[in-house]
Length: 222
Image: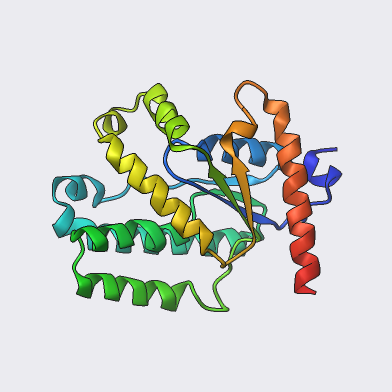
């Protein structure tokens, strides 16, 4: 018996993992998918035609990049639910507008007109009863010093060249975003409460909490 059956988690459940850079979204996505016998959905970065252009000129390409992300995530969300669920998704469609597009607008790298167009499109596509929202969003969080330590430890070149102030700002933006998020139920996990790399068996405690949240949500909807 796998953990999905043990904790009576419906086979069509869709769970999205969210959190700032360095909190371990990919590790959590893979561990949950394996323990629940679910499929994974990861962001496709390699095929993004705007990413390199964006890093060369934020102001010129931020709107194009965000529109591309919105379209791709919308298609992926539609695919997941047409497939019948049973997915763990790495990063949500909600973070694009609530954090990244807003950050470009606040910093002046996206014009007010472009930002308004983007948010109007997002709301028309996503913030409707017809959009298939996840059953649960698992939000990974932790102290900023620990997160920066993780980023430095994994040693990705682009991240190493990024000023520490950027990660601090991103951490604050994520905290502000999740505190007002209400598109689906949220389970908040502190990254210091588990270590799935050293202790993979800890995933069962997380699955148990997920099952409880899903059950409570189901009762509330009834």
